[in-house]
Image (tube, rainbow, N blue to C red):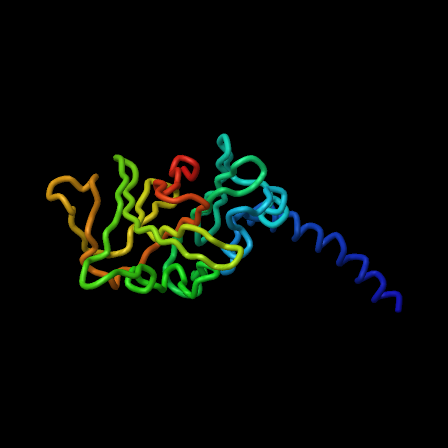
Length: 217
């Protein structure tokens, strides 16, 4: 039994030495977590800020009443009014499965649903989009109101590109200015099967798409 005891004692220093050099040559890495697929079911307008912090922790960036959360596969902006959420905007960085987020309580999934799925229209009229842009971002969106018991909210489905890190790339889509040469006055979507890569859920109607790309640089 004595040789075994001596051998076992010798293993300790060897193991410690290996671990030391392993940590030195291959130090652990920090990283962002994956966004949960039901994120918009839990984080939505009227939710208390304390609940958001309990679920998501401290934001990666905060400016006035805006908080930014960065995930591996998505970017989330939360706007507060007082102590509760006023609006949320979720932007997908990866449209392929399994990076799909349900736009609760709707059946639509970000990265899977199309504008034709989400935006009802009368007759043969094309889907019209509001626009907002600068040299660092470009956004086209269509707002819809959905009235569900306890969730009477405005949903904006958007095509978005922005100079964030990583860069948000807009999904392929064809559109044209409603007033030729003046895209700032609105656009007409020509490919209704285009997938939207961002969604905003808000208490209020007629707002610009609330996404501050500077929070994600």
